[in-house]
Image (cartoon, rainbow, N blue to C red; front, top):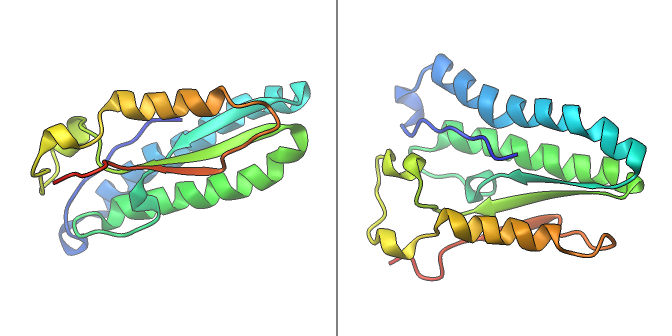
Length: 151
């Protein structure tokens, strides 16, 4: 589950419509996709659900109140779902990347000081691949990935 949108602005400058748009994609999108695949996983007693959250799901930041709220919801959903589905041998994982060089960060009000040092999408993809390749008996319930030295 890797759909995500962000409107980076201070809370007092935000609108309810902007917040709803982020909730619809970042939270309801994960709900809908998970609902669609989990029945089959339960029947087969195996599977892996990986939700791409964000470090914003664990910390707040200026210009990110609405976005962080959606990612905190993703974290709560993922943590609870992991406990619910593990009896069916289904792994549920939250991957929490820091800044990744995507269109989302290109449109942020505060740009990275050294874009070459922040994460590339391939770094996150490699992390997801590593999780999938774990033995079925192993589950990394949460994983943070951040730039080694973003400055």
